[in-house]
Amino acid sequence: MSDWKKRLADRGVDVDAVKTQLKRFTIETPSWGYAQTGTRFGKFLHPAAAKTFEHKVQDAAEVHKLTGITPGMAVHVLWDFPTGFEPAVVKQCAKHGLRIGAINPNVFQDQAYKFGSFASPDAAARKQAVAHCIDSVAIGRQAGSNLLSLWFADGTNFPGQDDLARRKRAMAAGLRQVHDALPESMTMLVEYKPFEPAFYTTDIQDWGMAVLLARQAGPRAKVLVDTGHHLPGCNIEQIVAILLDEGMLGGFHFNDRKYADDDLTAGSIAPYQLFLIFDQIAAARAAGNPNADAVAYMIDQSHNLKPKVEAMVQTVCTIQSLYAKALLVDRKTLAKAQAAGDIVLAEETLRAAFFTEVGELLGEVRSEMGAAPDPLVELRRSKYIDRRAAERRADQADAGGSYA
Ligand code: PSV
Ligand code: MN
Image (cartoon, rainbow, N blue to C red; front, side, top):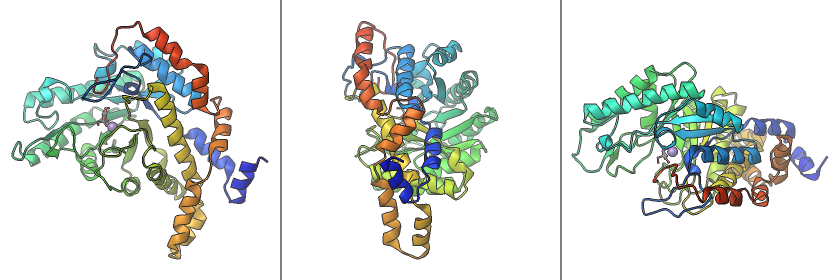
């Protein structure tokens, strides 16, 4: 037995069980993370950035080939299919070993949405937004996706701008209409965000509001936690624990933040927080909560400075390693320490898992899955980015993306 396996086994870790969990873990990458994006102040161009949908598929497929755990690419309807959805894209993805993941309607960029979408005071804007989301459900059916992921920029910028209770009722009514259009197989994810672009009120500002609206919408509506969408100091792992226990956790958008919704690489600022989030999921699974295995994991980052595919591989590997660490928590010792009020032992049990080196474990899992033992090293060795840059440099198309 190799040294690292022995060390884990000596600590009571069931290495095979952990490996099985790791092989089941998948994360969707976002199509918009491959495109030429930036900030509202400008964007720095990457010659290898995706300029067409085909490029995005190539990049997402490359990330999957290297990591083995990203078989789905989330799509943003108007950025990816500006002239309408063509069912042929499903085959196009399959050709690259990829499937279309979460469908993200866009009810925030059209001029009609100046005062909101579902919550707008303008009935025509509300109608347009609901119709677009129902059309997105149809895209999901054709694409074989089981996730409709809803985020709303709806809110107000000034006190007195609108009737807040009316907005709440309008948001609830719109969500119910979309829920009514969902097939059995589809889950509707309701994402919250405290501010931006709205700066005074946001209609779905936090997890409580998201739960309320999801419950009113119907049984297939759940909450999506974007790790960048919290006010400073917010305890995200507690939100995750509560949502899981309530059967309301639908999925994640991973990224990290220092100040607000910064789109920084997941785990680059607060890796312990992400570990503690995964610890709550692993704890719920260990306690037999079936909701722990019904969570959709997605990345929501678009980088201005880092090369897109490198950033994505780095992100996937970081998330996977923090998930692996959470699987190593000695749950028996933790439970005993908690019952005995031994706070230090309880905390040390978590810290022991967090500080465990998991590179060899992940290398073995990846090799067994046919992926690269060290995906980032392999990406650099393969010169994939240079090759794509040479091919794409001449292409004048712009595939769009957030802030594009
Ligand atoms: C909004 O900030 C958000 O998190 C939503 O999920 C959007 O779909 C995505 O970012 C766009 O990048
Ligand atoms: Mn998001």
